[in-house]
Length: 298
Image 1 (cartoon, rainbow, N blue to C red):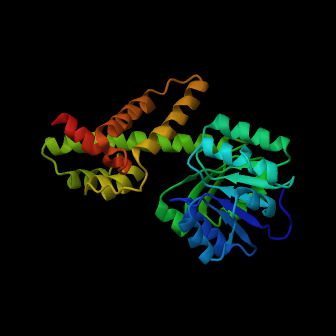
Image 2 (image 1 turned 180 degrees about the vertical axis):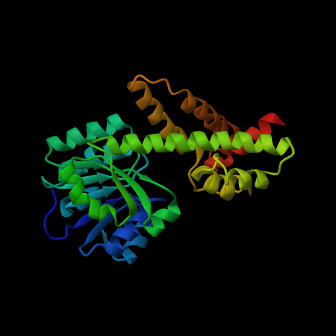
Image 3 (image 1 turned 30 degrees about the vertical axis):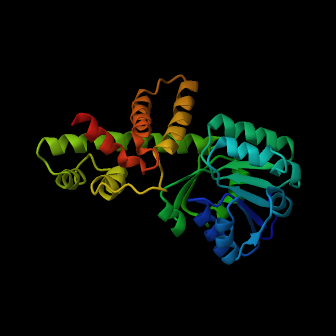
C-alpha cells in the first residue's frame, strides 16, 4: 500500500472537477505530484502550480505510490487501468489507485478485482458537490475500501474534501454516490414541476421558494439549484448537463434492479432528462428541465 513517508502522488484526469482537485493536492501535499491529461491546457495549469508533467499514463503509474483518477465514467477508468500503456502494465506492485470518478458499482468491483490480481490496491471514492467546492477543497467524498486502506488514503482525500465518509468495502462509495445523485436529480425534477405550477396558479416563483425554504419542503436542491439556477433561469454550458445526469441515473437504476427494487421515481426523472436532451437542452446545466416542463404545459 502506501509508505510511511509522504508518498509520491499521481493524478490522471484534469477536467471540470479533476483540475481543481489536483490543484488542491499539489498545494497541500509535501511530496511530488505527477499529473497527466490529454488536454495540454489543463495540464499546463497544474504544472504551473507545481505538479510534475507526465507524457503518458504509464509515466504516472511508474512513478507514483498513489494514483488519483478523475474521469467521465467506468469505460474511461477501465481504459486507463487496463488499456495499452495503462496503469496495470506499468505500475509497481503495492501501489494504490483511488478512483474519484462516478461509475457503476459492478464496474468498480470488477476493476478492483482485476487490479488486485496485478498487485495493485483499489479504492472507489466518488465526489459530490459543485465545481466551486472542488476549488475550495470542500467536496463530500464517499469511499469504498477495507478499513486499513481507508485509513491510509483518508488524509490524502482530505486535501480535496471537507467530508470524507467510509461507506464500507469496495463499491460502497459508488453505492452511496449513485443514491445521492439519484435523489438530487429526482428532487430537482419535482421542484421544477412545482415551480411551474405555482407560477401558473398566481404565486411568484421567488415567493414560493422563500416560503418553502422556511418549511418542511426545504432542501439542498431548493437552496442551490432552485434559487441559483431555476429561479433566474440561468443554465450555463460547461456545467453538469442532462447527458451526465442520464449516465448516473442509469447506473442507479441498474443498481436498484440488481437489488430487486423497481426504481419508479428514478425512471420518471430519467424520462424528463431524456426529453430535455431530445428537446435541445443537452449542453445546458441540468436544472434547465424547468424550461422543458414550462414549454410542455404552455
